[in-house]
Length: 359
Image 1 (tube, helix red, strand yellow):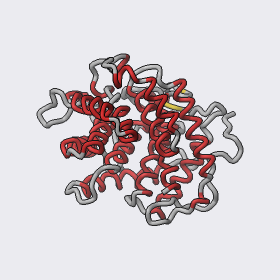
Image 2: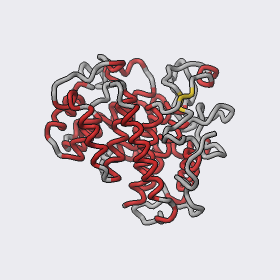
Image 3: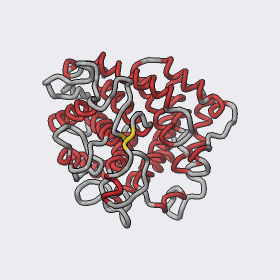
Image 4: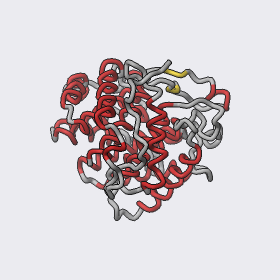
């Protein structure tokens, strides 16, 4: 039986997330316990999720850095610097494992760019910008990365996040426009009337949980850097609002979102729940979502998610990495514990909740 330490992670009966309009009260959440969960899950990931250079490992590293920043835990950041020193500073290529010559998986750039934001070490900026530029080698006719033609909705996240980070670090609007183009491309093609995204429009008309999670997280990363007066902001925001409204509708009675979002006969899936919680909390605290409508779903999501953290601070019920298929394909995917897809998303969600409380 999965068990979280009694009282850990659970929110109180008050339901209002602290945002910049001061609608969130500190006693709505046990800050110390969420911080404990974030740091201990990050420590577990340091020991177990950095043994490769695949995209999910990079997402876990990025999550660890998010936790390091919001908690002021420099030791977490310093371990990341040590583990990846060869790729960061010594010229070793990060393109190995399933990242080899495959741009969607060349997400190592998250690490040096986020390190630059935290340390202002120009060596990290140089390495990160190299990675951001490499993402757009030989773009297609519309200016999208060459891999776009494979038409997986998952691909929205990598370039959106890398280019958003590059813009945050440099102020160069080229990177911002690339990130916006990513989000609008996938929103216009993959989003359906329900406000959710198909995994693949032609061959897999299913609302796979983590596929949508990547989209929700991409919106959050873009809005974290997108100027309020940007001419395309309202257009992006309309898609984001559609998605968030739909997620509230399809949230399960246990606070979780499911392997197929609109099919509660499938199973509660923790990585997508974490990603949705991350995006929703970011939306509330940044004034993009009204607190009175979205706090309760966020609270329920955190309460539900906490039931899937085991005694070793691992997240359970994580869908294995997957291509697209029919309904039975998604239902029968392996359910993993401690998989970096899930650990990363848990760290993103926890760090966002802590930010909301501390601002």
